[in-house]
Length: 383
View 1 (cartoon, rainbow, N blue to C red):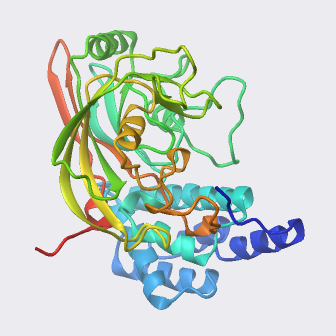
View 2 (cartoon, rainbow, N blue to C red):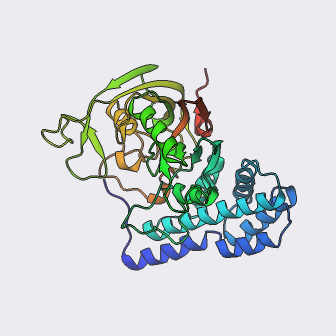
């Protein structure tokens, strides 16, 4: 498939224009620091609105208002108790998300005003780069966070940060619990892809790590995900029981064992996922390529835990996850293979979220949920 690419000199011009449409993080921090001491009241939102109108040329008043509201909502959902804490939390999320948007613009030469608007139209996490704590038991060493999308769990050894202000789940946890990680590194009970948001288990001690590891290894943990998919499934419930193998062309994706895309001779690993359609409707708020096309909200319950399992199984049954660029989820059904498109029109995120986790531990069973906001992306059909 082709993607619209301009000559080099035009790419540079587009990059400059894209950056001009983004709020400058240093100016935003300075202006907010001198604004109202309470970052979550109406006057602060009005100040934010003024900043957006000033710093995002060409953005309509309606979109600017949505951006200000989204930022304030992201802040208020932190459950902060003091004005200073709320103010600091807001600045942290805004600074990192804007740094990320600039990183995308520099990498893909495609982030313009329209794409920024779609970032705003989604759930509160769209502009919040903060991993919210949804369960905390320091005495037992178990903390569960709600990971934002497009955030890495950690920077692997030998790798560098993708941009200067890039936060990771590991850095967030280490900063929040400095005594637990003064000499060690955060340990995680489960893994989520960079593009996936949702529940992650972090262990503050070796004992907690061991208990969580055994629970996951013995498949005693119940995991529930929610996804927005392209098209309307003909089934209400289905189970995919297909082994997953390595992809023959590169290492960025996986494939169903025995398929033309799988490595020849790779029998794969047993993989099983249960799916249930929660809503069918029309996609909205994802971007020009998918808005107005058929889509569905699907609950996913993986019995096994293979790499890209849900993404591969949904692709196998003909319903790619909206925004999943790796598996072709940025384009509507029936899109001609030789047709060009602008990357700035692609969905702002991959719509896969780890929404619930039931974790049996020796001392208690932890049952946590984290909202995803996907309902607003699938406008229900009129009966």
